[in-house]
Image (cartoon, rainbow, N blue to C red):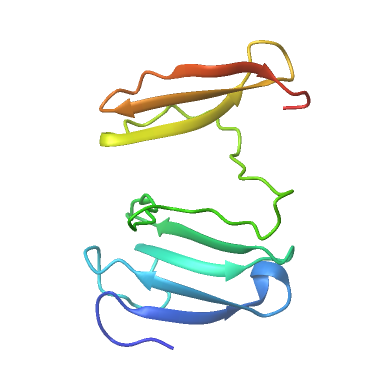
Length: 141
């Protein structure tokens, strides 16, 4: 499903995604380029289920496109897992922290000072400098 315009919403079956003919819905960036099926240059936001029955919302870019930030906007953001035994998780990263921007903060999980541990850092505003909140947590990190 698609329309011949910028900012097109496309749903496409993609058996390569999880081997079961997964339908992936993507909204193309109307500020980048007009949608053309099969075009190598694109910017899009997508949503799909994976083989582990987890729902993903993410951005993609190809060719000369730029991978864009994903922002969930509202009066606030509540994360509900449906089970109080669950948790909100962050993946450990190695990339240099970006500056979040005025009025924003970035929360990061990094390798801890001691081997196999993690640390949690934060940076805010226009500063890329990270401050350690807690270090040497857990094992197998």
